[in-house]
Length: 265
Image (cartoon, rainbow, N blue to C red; front, side, top):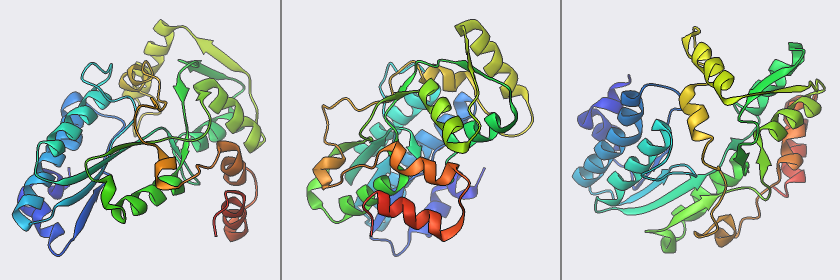
């Protein structure tokens, strides 16, 4: 693991001269200890380093679905990481995004690649709900929070304009990439076994048991907290952006078209 994740001294040296800190560090797969190391102990070290250097402004990107009783190590560790930063004397803003999509995302692109050669898509938890948000809208929210003192001590939910299921995402990725495939719904027991097998394969797993557990909590905005609209951001819909990068066009023309469709200059 990187030294700056495990050493307050190394982290402090990396922050010298900073006026604000944005914490985007997270993992989706790993052991319970790995989640604690990245999502809890790193924020604790970050708070200590900020205190030592006199840095007060911190933006922390967490996740929708956090809570003390959340069903997964990922979400519980994200909850504890938020709490660690709130306990420090910081000018803190927490952003909780839903599933983030964009030109190099790890989910829609994966579903598109799999459907390019698989005859069908075995899928567990196909009814899991998400409110996908474009990466550029999240980036814009971070910038506006930095420029808006009123967001200090706020928690904002970063979500797109529509709620979709995991099965919807698979279908859309297949359609937009030109390789639609039938979905084979898996019962919970088979989905668990599939995730267990994937965890044992070499490299980064496509799915883990902890991922499945996370899907037990809807990854959608509660509406009880400020959203992107409170920052003057109208979030782009999935269908405005994803077809452009999952399709067959390439290069700057593709990216410009995506931004134009999403009302970006």
